[in-house]
Length: 112
Picture 1: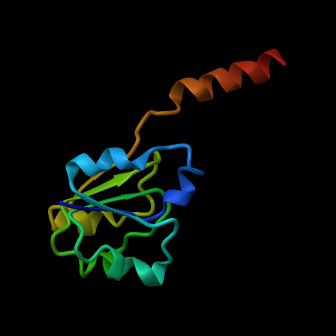
Picture 2 (picture 1 turned 60 degrees about the vertical axis):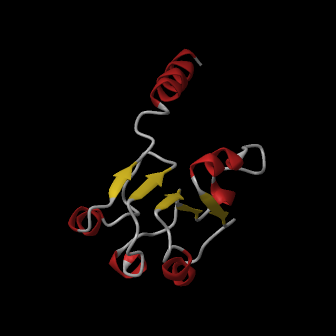
């Protein structure tokens, strides 16, 4: 399996060990990926992990083996979900990772 991480610099400054993904396949990590670079960088990917990289019809068009897009955030706005649905690409995000932290912050502000 070919796994591509398109924008590692947006999720870590070196404090996360991304080698954990190597047990699932060949991993290619890019610090950042411009819109123009995306199409070519993910062309042979089976899985793409991203945070801010735009995945639209144009950038996904060469990724004929792509089965999975994992988003390191809560939103889906950077991924063309209709295109993914039509091509059988599963898309997942980091759903509720910040729920407790947001609630704690709000109560902290209230007490302040």
